[in-house]
Length: 191
Image (cartoon, rainbow, N blue to C red):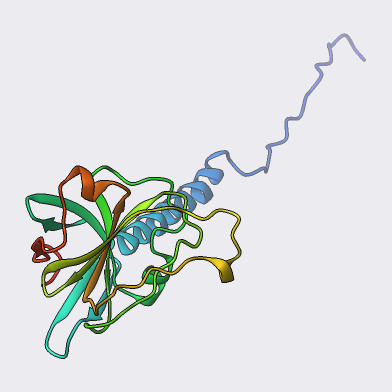
């Protein structure tokens, strides 16, 4: 070497790994897809509807939203049980109702004598039996029967045929002075 200084040459190799924004190209569409699916589920679940026929000429639109039933001077905000599944489930599994809330049972035909029971119920209720727009019977303060075998549960049946059943909190009828003979306005439910 003749006096020239040797310089070390460092060779840098270009990295061929994918750039960090590549993950964004994967992540953003995935997030958008999940949000679209969640929005569609929420939209269709909120707007789920069924139909229950109460007579040959009358059709009731049944929503999962709350409707208003008026008994005498009292408005009750009800969830409508208008299909087989919701009628069978009823208030089973619910741990409470608002003071002016209930469930209205709408049947495929009128002038019937359905049997009700307290299967899987956690709250005591009043059962209001309705025929021709009037309260015809009230089963008051019906208690849950925890630990009782299904075959041993008590049945609640109207003495006369009915068109609708309204379940509300126990003592609702007492507190709101609801009596047999009171007029029931179902125009907030029946279309």
